[in-house]
Length: 236
Image (cartoon, rainbow, N blue to C red):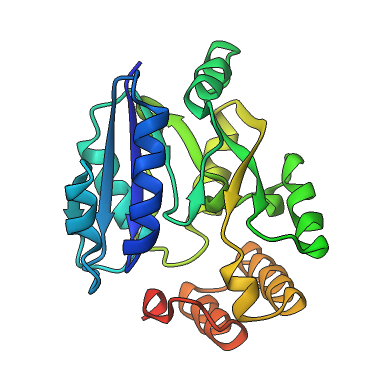
């Protein structure tokens, strides 16, 4: 089976420079393509991705949902694998994904660990092994068969925030979900810019507000108020 790795980016030149060689090494014996959908970065992210052998697209709208949908639309693989630029999938991830499909699962993700020695962040990482909605997130990467992604209508392009939760909520109603017991390594930069308790409080408030139907505009305002984002242009 061919895998299409889809990476939405905005000013991620450094991360793309690190991530793409890792992916290409892991997939060197596998039919694959890497699609970087860039939101018109000012740091040459798209050019660097193309130089490293990826298919580089530009999406003028700063919307991760739209970027991932655009990547999925041109993907030629039967498997779609959505990866954030600051996430590092584990060794052997493609074999793990294939095994999940052979076991009868339709969609899934990995657990995660932070690139930090913080004991508090290790607690957060521990809970990603549980199949609970609040324990999920795009940082854990997401794999799904393209036919299933299309049948669900992809990501909701109207969402600027919580788009992964929305998609998983739809998916779990129809598809069999798997958490692979290996860790994606995730950047702790948001916690380093803020504090452990502030980020967790923000996550709790945002998740609860989303669940009760608070509008995207208000969710985004709440996020901007609570969190100093390491890349504030993402929230413009």
